[in-house]
Image 1: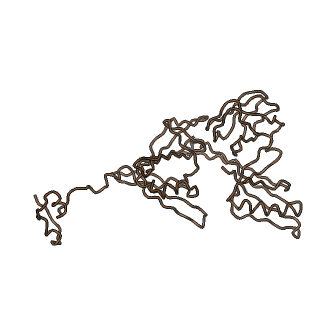
Image 2: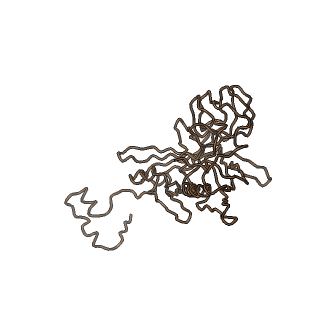
Image 3: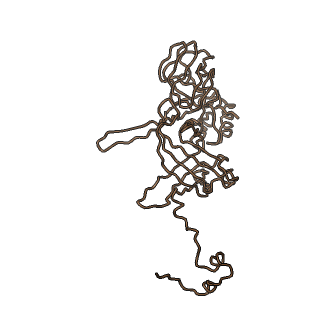
Length: 194
Length: 174
């Protein structure tokens, strides 16, 4: 069952963290050494406010569909979380990908892929981030984190309708009934579900 | 990228092994041609102790109990005395093939314990291991100075028949 955050809520005060753990050591003379663990997780908080009576109920129903940390859900965020220019919907890979790869070979496409664009790959809920600009035309795009799963050539990439697959950080979720119960708000603390 | 790879040769109940290979990496890694799956099941690996004498000190491996896979093996007795190898691995960027690895621990699994913590809401499987020297620590199976041992070699001879009645420690002097 796929659960999504109700679509018409007013979303405000978004914070976003990139959690990239490393092994790090610092010697007595301050010389440091570090190694990447190849792990990345989006984490953040969003404030949601309901517009009307139906949305208030939808938000409560959403809370109980998700049930704290029990079930992951999709968050559909606009603007920065979608492609900068509209990229052709049929952008797809033209070489198979292996787990651990930090580049993806794409076929020709319309639009520009910008550094910082987020996208998802078919059959993989992880949100990947593009590291460098890529002009239209077939070629390689640099990504982080490294691919968590392999894929076959021709697998589509989603830059335009990608959603974050998230999980609540806590089991208890609170909704505030403000302004005499007219406005319902809630702060959702989430992390990417993997 | 660094990760830990764990190989457990679970007893399959027919005298053979059911090999379980898991890794703490975000994606599957390949080590010596074997795929170690990034199942996300390993929660904690305790530190490995070194001692100056031969000892069978093991370590504790904590795995998630939410996935029923381990529970199935646990119920079937698969973990009992199953050989376990834990390796620390280095994977170069852009690849999932382990190039450098070293042994962190080698030994045998003890019977795992399922632990439920209601406060933190965790369901874990705690697995104690003994290191490879556990065999040295075993009591040797030699003949004893008893009636049973003696009569197995010399049927009818009753040399030790009063041993059990003499409730004192035997001392053998040369």
